[in-house]
Image (cartoon, rainbow, N blue to C red; front, top):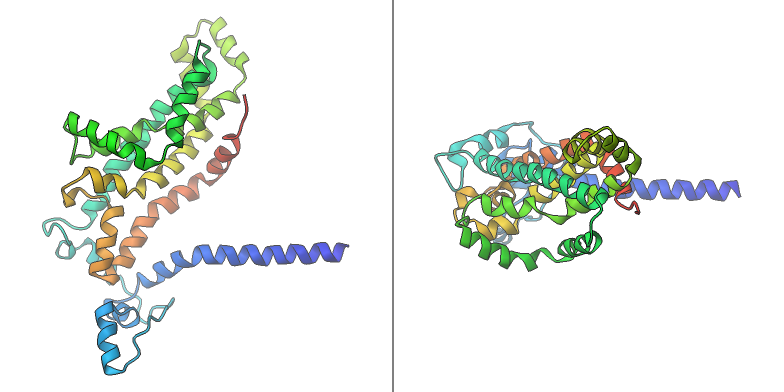
Length: 299
């Protein structure tokens, strides 16, 4: 019996290791190839035109996956920061699009943290008529596919004169329903006796929110930051629809053009694109896990 249990554990361990290796391989592959020279990249990963030419000459034109560079080089990273390698605006480097992503994502995260934490306190601890019905209606918006709200958001942005500006992306993102749902679950785990004791001492709602609610839902706020960053850092549809000026595109949208133009810089750009998400996840991993666990809390 113990032998069978041990065998099952080994099989499960090997299976999980294989799955983990499959998930990590694209990151390791991209990282290692980002330190290759442009000549080596072109030789191992020929374009469609280069493959066609090789087929005509009878030479091998297959892609050769390679993990170890023949010559370790920062050439691709230097090219990414070089203004001459910018594919849209030759006056500014590709880091402009990195900055565009930051200018869109961070206001969304900050705004949603404020709005979601306040709404979570209202829906989680304040008692008023129609609270649960209102919360249910609010949650319906979270269940709707993103594409359903694109047209209304576009029309509203057009009326407000926000089209082709970061505001057309930032303001809809601030009032997302997911953050309210997640933080409400944290607020509901706080004993109501804490709030009653504060009220007896003369504390108002603002004091209760700042002194009791916010400190106790800090893990939820950290988890929400990770999830929001992952969602909006990778956005494509919103900037593609709301922005007409290519120079305002975020790196998530601009990355595909970099890869089409030059595969070498594409590897370096992909690593720089992934780096913030990996760093944030590494520092806030425990909060993310706890946030997912508590998101299933009941009233």
